[in-house]
Length: 421
Image 1: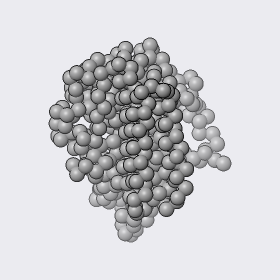
Image 2: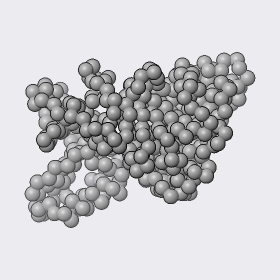
Image 3: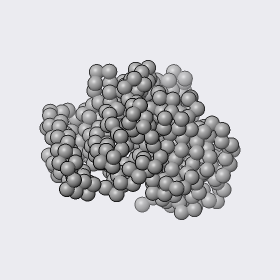
């Protein structure tokens, strides 16, 4: 069986859903599984709305209506006066009624469980519309709620998978022998049934989890770019796509900040030897990039930029040396708060870390370690990773910036910087 994953850009409009149906009709069979993300920028819209609710801002009503109308218009464009229109419209209205009830319930600031529940509606809405449209196109399709099968801990916003019940649940409940299954990415649940999310862009990870559990012959990610590039093609016009990559190469690229594939995706695929194909839903005839364990190492140039970084420096209050115990305490706190470090540098009396900025997690980190360390931080930074790039080219990118940290190895230079005003 095969697993296809479609991101939000692929279903941001009625035309996108129609294009998805053509790809599935041409390439999938009964028993295959389709993972679909929230439509367009719905997740970002839901997140902004949820933050307003948590802050006691009643202006969220306008956001709610905007998201509701957006989905209704896609339904109208897909079904028009067809009989399915009434049924799908009623289903979507019911979901928005439930969301409205959730938003009106009493909440406290920083309630990440509430945030995950609100964010889950994006995937539920999109897959509900997609599944009915595929059925409308005479395909044998079954919609299933992935939260019944992927089990996690309660680390809301970046939940960790509980693999044993997850694999058992997917093997016994998710797959269908006589239909194509349409399900959600990004979302899951605890053993108590509380909705969780797998982290931003977590739909890739969902597809990999399903593939590993089912022993899939392959996974295909349908993106808005025709493969994995050596730089961001949207900002670097001379970026070139790879034909083949190894699992290890992709793990390094995602760690450095490449956004084509979710960082946690590769491990379950590599452990099972399942190949990953990255292709373009805009140009499905193109070959894309194949990722396996057999690709040769590539020494071409590479430029990856990771924005919205925060740099935090820890200094021992009593001016002792930074010891393994001190560093262990910092890493333990990072792990407990779900913080993944992107670059580390230490000296005799201090240790510095950069990670993706999250205000809530940063505040909890500072609070948790205030009695052990003096801490200083800088926000709004960019982490650039240059691989096999000439020094003079690197310097052109750093012109007009303030460099906070720089590290170099034989083949890579990593720089944390902030653009000057």
